[in-house]
Structures are given as structure tokens and as C-alpha cells.
Image (cartoon, helix red, strand yellow):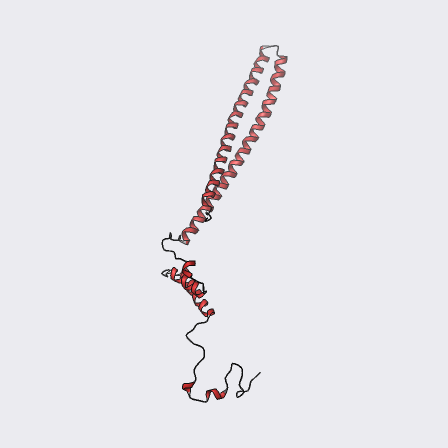
Length: 203
């Protein structure tokens, strides 16, 4: 759609407006005034560059960004980083996270192996208990029918086997108890570390 050049339009200019002296023609808008959107784009580009390139005054960059956002009293919103501890190097933070993750995997592997060993000890104890019960039944049977020194000797040998199996069970029980206590200590240690690592909420 084309409008006639000589017909005045609302907020527009006609050909006659430009036929006078050039000294009388001047733009209404100030070319030095940057629009809000352009100001935000420039401040955003500066902020992005400061985040990836060393040497910038980050406090000054942040103040420009807040002013571009037209934040009232930006110095109250962002008092600056002076006097605050310096931020950690991102590479160092990543290295610490990897080290922590590796430590957690190692702890999980250790806990899994410990649990597997405890289960194997429990199975060995179960077999020993069944053996002891069987030997005690044999001992009672031989003792009831013992009529010779040979029979009494066989009963004594069975009783020695029972004592040996019970001694082995005592050792297994001690191992299981030690491993369970160690697992409990590790669990408490992990909980305490997580409490220390948990960020404190400002009052």
C-alpha cells in the first residue's frame, strides 16, 4: 500500500517539509539516546565477555548491567564483592567434584564388598550350626549305646569336633560383629560429612 507523498499523515512528513532550507530540517529523536533494548543487549554482551575473559572489573560490569535493567539504587542490591572471599576457580571446583564422586564410588564399592563378605560368613555359620547339631545327635546316640572303650573314644572324638566347630563359630561371630560396627561407623561418618557440606541458610 502506497500513500500519497503530498498528503499529510498523522505523525508523518510530506515532500513539502523537505523543500525548505536544510538548516531548518533536524531529526526529532536524539541519535545519542540508546533504546532500552539496545542498552540491555550491550550490557548483556559485556557481562558475557567478562564471564569468559580475565581482566574485567566484575563489580563495574554488574553495576552497568543493573543500570541497564533500570534497577533503583543498584548499589543497595549489589554492594560489590570487595571484602568477600574470592570465588573458587571453576577448574578447581570441577576437580573437587570429581574427587568427591570417586570417593563416594569407592565407599559404595567397599560397603558392597563388606556386605557380601558378611553374607558369606553368615552362610558359613549356618553350615557350622547344622554340623554341630548333627554331631551332637551322633554324640548322644553313641553315648547311649557305648559299651566299650572304642565307643567312648568315638564319643570323645565327636565332642572334640563339636568344640572345634563352636570355636570356629565364635570366630565367625566376632568377624561379623566387627564388620557391622565398621559399617555403622562409616555410615555415621558419611552422614556427618553431608551435614558439613550442606550449605547454611542465612537467617
